[in-house]
Image (tube, rainbow, N blue to C red; front, side):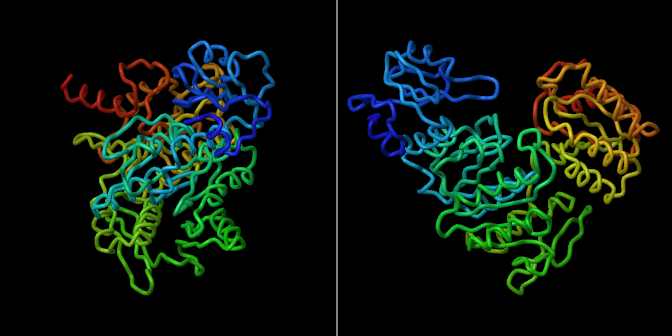
Length: 488
């Protein structure tokens, strides 16, 4: 593609007046290590790395042109200065890949909790109905039936458009993070359906306030196609607020919940072993039976049902797919020891998610709950105390341990754990900094009938080394169970 046409179609003004008429672009990247001869390099200012520092490297490796925000002179190749490199990158990616989203049914899912589970439920329903479907999200991407490793909930604009361009599937389900929305990673993409699951205290280290966090999430619904629809959980303060906001903008909405104003109302439910929810769908009561317990999962299922109905999938097909739903890696993933406790791994890393996780266990009639969790280093510190309070109230024993330290100092995090322990736990808890030893200790303490619930990491691998030769909570549990039963 010719650079002149690329920037004109992307609506990027050539402020520097560079002659770009004869320059051909063979590829686009924001990573100088990926540069090949004939590529356009877009310098983006990141949070740990500034792409402008690698412009000379990009040129040396063969970049034909560079886009950036800084005033840079005397470059060997044309340099186009823009006000926002991230936004420019999204616009360029859209033109370079000829906006593949227009040819597909696009479904975007946002919210603090439930994005991954809802996306997997919906993917299961669509796949079982015989339609082809891509999934782009936190755990992995599924494109044309093949899985690809995922590094962010929502990929960068370039990776996202590349994935969409490679997809031959009719429908695309995408988890949409608040970070991605404010960082222009979805620039130019339009959705047929936008889904809002809920909003709780999280990421305020980045957004500052809940209002800012809400406004970031609401950006998804500005990306709806002209006849697009918003599907919302109405039984959430921020869901109600979003409904009012969208109603004023005359956006088509479908609201789910127990409130009178809901379009798909929850008639009755049971959250325990034989979990089900009854929905009033246009005067007909439908019963969703789900193999996953918990009220939060019933809401996820109700949302997935609503989207599937809008896709014209038959009720019986939807209900059967949900009844057979195999679950999601790292989301209330259960491991049973015949002679010991039941063990659960869950991704819960907010106070509300922990509440639903522990409350579900209590509803299942467990004898004692041992809860093991920690905090992400360098992230929202204001939510930590509330997480500990919830654990202390719903668990019989709370064990504070390490999560990813990221940029936070080990001794500082250890001091935080000890401080929170003394303030909120004291008599019914422990502090064991080594995560693998924390799990090992609790598995020795817990008996048959007890539940050991490990939250925070879910499917993710550890970012630091611990005492046992394992790389995740799942590996730790399987290693300890194998060791206990003499298989290793």
